[in-house]
Image (tube, rainbow, N blue to C red; front, side, top):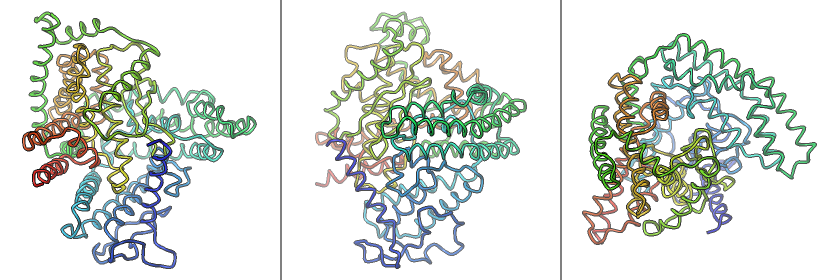
Length: 623
């Protein structure tokens, strides 16, 4: 299927979804195959202000047919995040103007939460037993998703919205303008300018949220603030034309033939004025407040220091792993997994003739030296070659592939993936570290994790599954998505990608040890009172990663609690399901079909994924 056909299918899907969400102006019944169709009791989906949930029982209002409710209610929630809609390339399809930033004021957050609570109540008013099996699965996924959101309302102000990491509002916003905002027309450019004019308001709301957190005692550890200050200061003290907000717009406009040079200059002059009058002052105000926070912050790292911090951490673990595993159970799982992985690494070290009395960091240093290093553009070229090779070799495991392309983009930080825009305007992107040098032995595993057959395979495929309800195309569960990507690393080894490359295989095992160590370190920091130094020492000793990288990772776990535990738990769940399928099906087991079951279901909470796989096995055995 070529990309143009894919785009037409995606737009057809979105048109159908939107049609299902609308009622006619003269109160006619919505078009549906269900005899139970009634006029929607939900507020109009586009452009309305969210209202508090009604005090009346949800069942008191006429119900939409279930499939229509799924799409109507989810798209209504999705419209609360106009930045995400633009990132996905859905502005036109969803009837959005594409000129708004996503508000983060307290009132807007509370309105969104009220909508989430009301939607969950409306969902639970449906009789699940009367639904078809596919509808029941969608019901369960949507209920888990909404219930998790509602559980999180208690902890609205427990996160750290300004740090050095990509989850930070200012860094996320910068990437939105520089990488994700389209500039392919005059209207796009005008939308860009209008959004630039909203940065100051967004930062005002950000500062209000930071003040609320400070009053609650939710203050990042001192190091996290200190690491964030240079990026904030760089823009706060810049001239408008040297900011990335200006340079990104200029670069995109200069290659746009539909706007003449005079028109481009006019747009750039407007951008310069807006950046000078709004964006830079916003960064200056943020710099002042973060400098203040630095003066009152402590060196305590874990969320145990926060009011009701234990409950918050338990929530984050459940949110990311989609399981009820406790911090102690996750901690022990990490220790057990490290013991197994280290034994596998030792076998390859012995094959290479490496000394048995050296520490893991010493042994990994030998691997890095022996495998060689790359730098500059050679890193990007090597990643592109690895991805192309993987695409050519995954055939034995997959008969389902994404049609969207994946490209490699150099980045100062790197090591992450952003899925394609659904309208086809932007391919999937693997952001790879482009600074300094990179050891060859770890590069294959990272390429397989982020691109093929990892994140790009799974997430682009889910986007293209036109039979799934919108909610199951759009919702992502960390354990499922990160678990798949880590499983992809292991699958690459099973498919022979590392044959004849012991260094690359050690890179894979080191990456798996890294994810296992995360289980120990994350829970150690947030549930057992570990210090930064203690966590860094443990991870360095058990993964062999360079100290500087280790410290950066420990800092990440501190400002994003629980997220790093999802990878290994998700991988283990996929492997356990595969083993169960192999055991029960015997000669009937088909690896391609197993992967189809996982991928075609969309991103699922792990307990629901377990049930889907087991039901598929039972159905196959019954034939």
